[in-house]
Picture 1 (cartoon, rainbow, N blue to C red):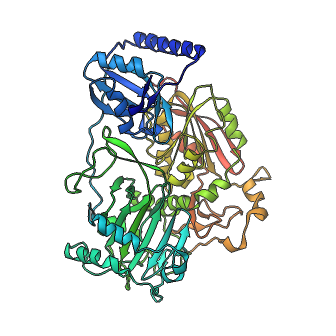
Picture 2 (picture 1 turned 30 degrees about the horizontal axis):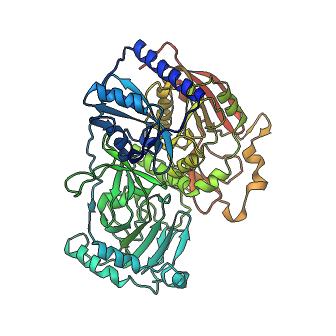
Picture 3 (picture 1 turned 180 degrees about the horizontal axis):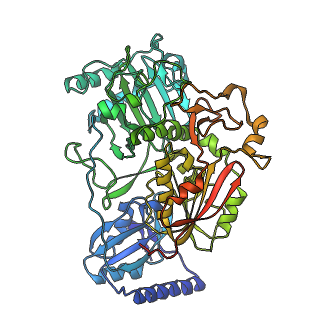
Length: 614
């Protein structure tokens, strides 16, 4: 069967392949019969999900050829979809004709497998409000103005000194008015650039003044150009460098920008071509914003034409599709600040956090959940996004004891690697159904490039069904949380994922880096790994401050900032020596074994087999 308009193609099968396919269908029908599911109007389409790179338009076109389709539900990031036809005959037609057929998509091809289900339910989309102070204005510039602005940018190397042009890892950038320094995340206010803002920007800025988006003309412009697959790590524009309002004009291809609050809330906003994003107040000072490097975005299938009519949040259940990224150019306009920032968000403000301008001053210990989340965002999440490539290059050898745990699992077991990093454990045992998650979008992209199944998620709230995993691993993750309560919550989340009788392996950095007269690999690598220009030394300014650790030396206290050997990033790593005691506070789980392995305390947890499956 071949339907060219619908991209479905069935290649010629051999006699043996046809025999295997018939057996698959018979087995499917037998299972349905025993489970009490007969022919219905509802089908699940395996391999036909957004998580497989199948867009709503591609799948819908094929399904509509089979009959009158009533509804199509495509859950975000999942490898399956649900379709409901108006009558059982049409559903039967789709089940018979599409089963085992190949769907040719824009970037790949997948084989569809359909099964009947009793019903299809999905949560209705709840419009999530934008962060306070955030405004999106669609079609702010005309196509003609867009062309003029793009033509005004000269990316040739002849003007590098004039506009501080740089080629960064995930984008190229130009600065006008003042250069934004990525080494210290600030500007030199006494050294303006020879290049002022391009004249083509003046009509746009005057319109912003008239419309009330700004009350003073910007004097600094940063132009970023992103190719497909590129992005920018989550960040807050430095308070001491720029005034309140920040304008971002999106030209060329659209993209999705994620805003994250320190308490864990995430709002994904579609930035259409020629739209203007205005960040003021809380959205500018407290929420981080960033673009995950990827080639496809999840976007609403029917986008709103006005930000005032509906939220552009993309996390709805039934109206999503994939949007392939193209080249996007952003014009970010800002006003240089010449006085200390006195915003209402001191915990996130570099002007108010310390009286000393020295970047070596460590942060205070968190006193509430918001402070803890903010501390982790700055000293863990941003660091891993910044060092992802270098970090991955140093994490290539799986630890033997972790491999032993994975290889003892039964074939077909479902494994969740929470905090998977670059995915080095996802491929250890190919007989497992392994999925990973990590807070760093850059590391998740590395997993995807290696062919592993992984998604971006906080370890405190993993979007997997309760009791769905035979095993979980959490390798060198939990010590990144800055409070005992959050570490305990991370263990509880692992236990929630486990089936009754399932096991979890947890590793955390140990205070004891020399154990039973044996130095850990971390200490042994001191001479080989140290670099004089990147060494950072322990610093103890006060009892309520976090200390900064000297790399490749023994720990002097339990909660430390451990520098990474790449520029000036800090990585908040803590070490709960009483790991067993922490795990014992979680109901329904027991510590099966514990040990010390290469500078890590490790436990194997087992969920009570008598617990009822939920």
